[in-house]
Length: 309
Ligand code: ASP
Image (cartoon, rainbow, N blue to C red):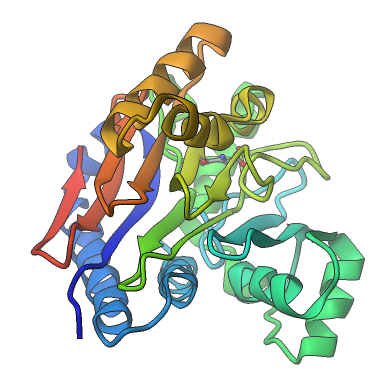
């Protein structure tokens, strides 16, 4: 079996001082490493990029360290509302869900939307009904809401603002959305992004994560991208597609395209966030305008590298 696969996952961008101050760095590195190795098992056995990104995104959703699935941030009413999307770069099919409550793994539902519906995105009550139809597990609110999120939400309410996950109410930042991108041994690309959104966000607000081209994109001819950051800025710049366009029209590799994308984000909207990118040749890259990004990658089947950059 060929070992020429690549995989990157991220656990959000932001100022990571708080994580470092609290000595939680090793928790993140351990988690990222374990999830990457699970992805390696799938890809090295000849599994598809789509299966690998779905698997990694679900593991990240299940880990309360991240702002997705269990451990999602809270909206203005102290509730969890999640967004997720997955895209197959071989078929150009995508599935997305937004404003989702109760469903344990939004990425799993997004995959069902991709495979079993004729649509790209389902939202709210309709998405929950579709999940029921697909027999996906539901959880009570208590499953999703963890203590650290309640404290974070109270801080945000006190100062009356919305913020990224890896961000403290008294300035400094943290955004903990998750994402995964992969290139399998057959050369197919896929991407997934999943999030609880922004702390103290308005009820019904949908960010970039479930929007194809904004928070997620995959095309075998160019690259696979997953984003994290202030969703409104990624929506307005259609940033993930912009990065793919740098590959398509200017023949950039993953590194050059990631950097060009982040430059564009900053230039156009003074955007704050980060991206992970794998190009059609399996080259891995990240870019961020925040001071930090939590990520790990396996490039061309090599050693895994985990970083809180
Ligand atoms: N991009 C996400 C959103 O705006 C937030 C994040 O990346 O932390 O919903």
